[in-house]
Length: 107
Length: 125
Image 1: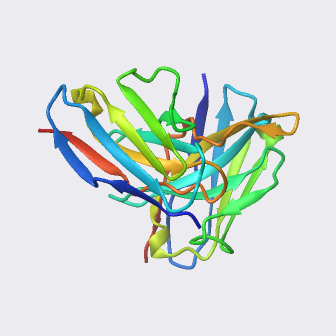
Image 2: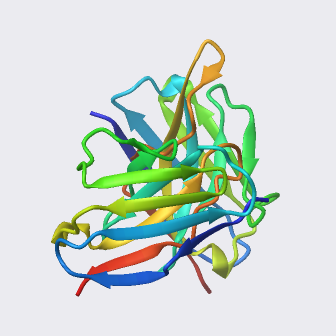
């Protein structure tokens, strides 16, 4: 099965900073990669699918890029409401494995 | 408004069984693939199972294969997860999540765009 890894596992940044999270698949998955945000105590929320397509209603400061095995989630200007754990997920076929998550907080 | 409401979570002894339900509303349930995802306390998300629009195909994570069974009743807009031979490591919040839209035999990419609030399953003696 394809394994998903994320780096870093956690990060601390200042409000307004540009934040980048990396996700890597152990095998080729084309563009079939989604990103989710889980705010503490809340249900996961879909941010980006197909590697770079922003889900309706998601702020434009979030963007995704990559294909094949290497993907990136970028927050262009970190806001206090972005404190959360971010997960990537492979979406091409079952098992729909999630990455281990990246916890983002404010410095 | 799309809504997914899970029920059936409980405290159960190791080796026991439990059936989770998820009632869907606000969309054409029979046109969407569905999934179960779980999250152990303080841990990350783990995909558990998938079911196609008509009840097939079904897929399972290795950790639950042979013990859990996913099913659906499109006449009642309902998704189910039958969990047998439960173990302590199955303790988690279980979410139902809407997957891809299917029409005419073609399905969009399986992304989980709506999630329920979750049902807590605790396996302990």
